[in-house]
Length: 535
Image (tube, rainbow, N blue to C red; front, side):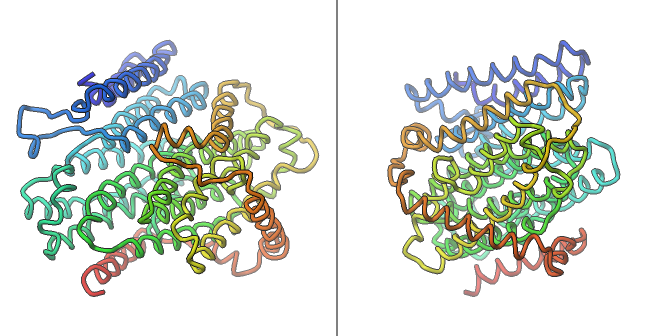
């Protein structure tokens, strides 16, 4: 099992090559064999680590580990690796029948999985950059795969903006190497405070965090995300929302939480309010949208903000809540995107106000969409409730922060009250796609959303090593709070959102060119620099 980390990378890459080279319907089943192999290796590796912890580090080339290329796995990386293997399997099930003969699409999709698993395990900053850039290229291809004008424009926008972010991330790496003489992540985690007072390291922090902020779609650098979601295939939208931006949050944890937080830069409040602003802006844009996928895209921005609010906390429970929300969001947001994809295909439109009667026309899909909506809105007995309750643990005594969090929750509920309008109305004739694997993949996600919402205590011990009994799903106050939020959301939807006043139209029509996005990025770096150097 010493080579298990390498197998995580090369099994999906080899499977992608088989599919690409043989170009047959039968060869495409190799993808599922690869996923089964990944699950087996993952389980065996975890068991081996329990016996031999030294297997967590694998060094290549016989060099000193401080300078060599190496992979490192701990609880955090293994959580993300397990999530990646699971979600890729679900998305392959969903998209397999419709793309079974698209060998190039399946090639890029599986190759991306191998690269993403490499990013999660690498133990040096330069290879983190390399995996990041490879991901950017592959995701651009998948966004533009439809080969339409909008898909090409969105793909190029994503490529250029994310490449700008990656370049500044690389500059930060160069500055760290110049000062420390190594880019080994574990070494830097233990020794970052040796030179953390130097301006070069503070500048490196600004450069690296600015690059990560683009990748993670923080405010105001999120503009690539709704553009990409709007034109990509449904499975790719689910992948972008459920996993790709989570890779950037993984980097946020590794670079900021584990490394630079030990430099005593005291940035917790900055990132909390950055997360809160991201969440509020995301939910505001979501409320104005009339396109199903755009509503979900902007909610990805909003939910990222909630994750950052938790991750930036000094409390173990709030941090665990932010980490758990990453996993929960992957489940319920993928469920919502996949369900929306079936609805869009059936009704041949993405416009919310043109879709009615989903509950009668597509009953099982409607039920699964309801599970996703209850989960993302934080309803008790669903997984989103557990992680959101943990996120707000650290600031439950701060009235202003609680008010911000409550505002975000009400906005989320309001937008999904709007989203839920597609469920009501008479049964209509739709274009049906007879693919049981799509409903099966969505059903697995729906079951997990409920299971985590009920059995979160044992899951907390098993996955996070934390006691989550603080969360009380049967607490009457929690139910009253949620019902109150729903009632406020219904009033807000009926008298404000539904009437689509001029300010809401202006927000919906607002767009950012690539040139302006770069100006915004520069302003973001200036603001972050000011906060670092002059506060």
